[in-house]
Image: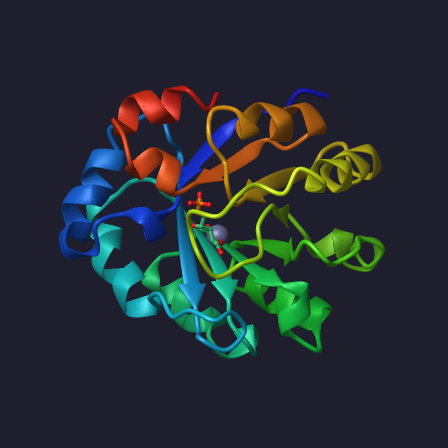
Length: 211
Ligand code: DX5
Ligand code: ZN
């Protein structure tokens, strides 16, 4: 089945000294989502930003706020991320002992719930949580940093997920550019995150080149 292609520029690659302007500029493109990478320096070896930054930019954007939590104990922070204005919260299966409960908590606030899987993580567990899932995020790099190289082998994983779950949103994140976007879409992904590729050129042209 053909799902709508959605482009989600990642704020991680924006100029942090001009966040408001960056969010406004990206809002003028055909991107529908804004991907928000929250990192704690523990689950991943990098620290980015949290709920306060999301709250500060929320009034300047009509985009769908797609929060990707790369943090330990995500359940402690879900409420504040919702209150900051997230429309979707994605957590890592490797980051919590109670994935199903954490996903239920996200849904209880009336926002969409996603699960993210690292390159080394297999997909069998998805059957156990699919009833509370709106989105599956397949990491195509190891999480923590922008600007890394797309791991081609993840396309097989995307294909297997698409065969099992024809209707769910499958998001790809890491190393997406105009060439790797084609590989990801052919494998079955329909939500494409792109950080350094979009923010290192003309935003409108770069976004258009990913459809
Ligand atoms: C990496 C983040 C990504 C990152 C992608 O851990 O989850 O969202 O911003 O950056 P690029 O597109 O540069 O690989
Ligand atoms: Zn991300």
